[in-house]
Length: 101
Image (cartoon, rainbow, N blue to C red; front, side, top):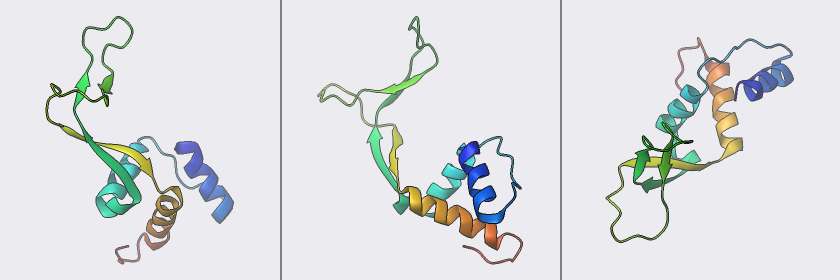
């Protein structure tokens, strides 16, 4: 994501003005602003605590299982890339103007 943002700013504005240290924040904020840009699925997500190679990783089993617990998370499965980039550009261009996008 950081490289993508750097490319966008360099290509659109001729210079790089943003160093992204937590790019996931852009996605979270975009989801809160425009949830229609995202394809989500309600799933039961777990954190692996016993695995030899996956300790600490999250996983969701999407197989049909009548014994699976109720969903506990909304998981992003896809994004309207063009819409996300458009929103990001709109936010950057309106920064400091006092206008909400």
